[in-house]
Length: 172
Image (cartoon, rainbow, N blue to C red; front, side, top):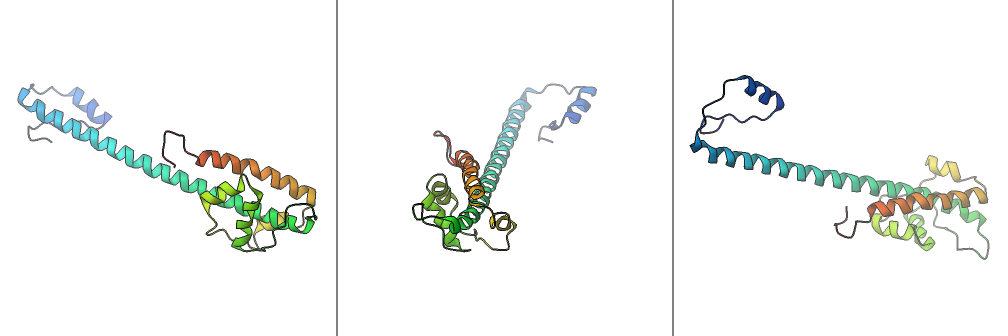
């Protein structure tokens, strides 16, 4: 209720109720107050909407970064498993074992691993031999591991694309 005795209509049901009632006489003196109240309410709605959008963006970014951590962990398991098949002429194997250094070692593989490592970091990404993801790859053949390693590059590249902000916007 405003100082002039006018009651704002805030919902559709409130509007329906107001339309069934007898209209109040128009008072030009209350117009400025009603306009000010309307502008304030619009600004409040815009502010709340902006806050909701910011929270949503932060949540989306957090989810994407977590997805990146999971993909890096999965790639690390494949990389560790491939170490036993590495020949003399291939890239050096990942001999770091089940450590954070094993995740960091993906950097030597270049794109898309190195850029994702820069975005996500390696904190809280620790491979463990008890992880079901390791169990799925530990006894795989060399050919299977190579296919898995190539296959994981696409979701990582897609994720990098999602994390990269458009040129006119700030990062997520």
